[in-house]
Length: 333
Image (cartoon, rainbow, N blue to C red; front, side):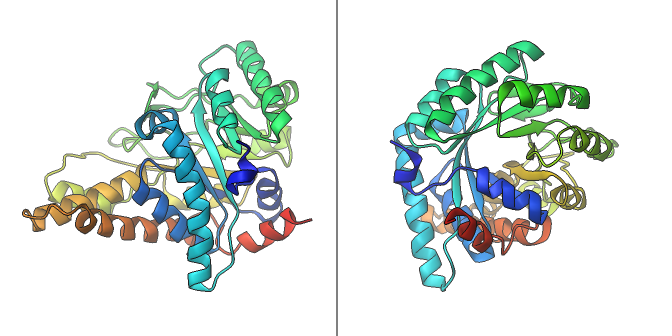
């Protein structure tokens, strides 16, 4: 099944507009129906383009066949919700996050994904190039865009685990992009996976100096930031208030993400914030209503809170709000 049959687009035009207009397309991970509903509603309300991300772990949890139907449902929901609100339709990408093998990328392309990431960052430089190039050559036959990665982010996300940062070396990016043919490049400049991004007392800091060096090496090329959740402290406090134990949870300051979104960074990945907001409101409702057993009564408030969070990210952090019409117009040319 080709992604156009599902109503998705690839990321090429999105990134061209983002680089020109200085904003970052939100890339939100989802694992269940409530998350995907919240993403769609929040981005439609913000009139923001969006990249729906599926990790290897999410594929295992939700089942690849079910995910394909969830993807189709997301597009139909977007159209229906936009009409209901009297707003325009928004462009949506279905993206594989942290694909680690050629076979995984191939499966996703064949099931309707419009974009894939091949994460060869755990390999040597040359092996990373060879693997990424193989995926690119296959994906481009189907007009599917490919994200590669140089450098290693610390932290934990599904099966992606690293103890320490390995910053992207600016001297390597031009060769990597040229030899692989990737359409965008994920770099490591201080962001990290998970809700515990920094040690107590450690100052959260994106290495903007490295980003600027990379921009000079590959001017105008789409750059991606992974591990960019800000870890909202109100959600952390709510989780801890109602029985959770999330001590020393620290994220990336939104001001730094705002600055990055006005550079060549045109895709910013956010996952943990959604998990935290969902968990916080679920814990609150069940603690305040211990006899409640209707999932709609505790997942509904969580969905509403996530919708507000996604909309706010588009409006106040990524500068992507209101950018959907320009992308939709460019896609029709």
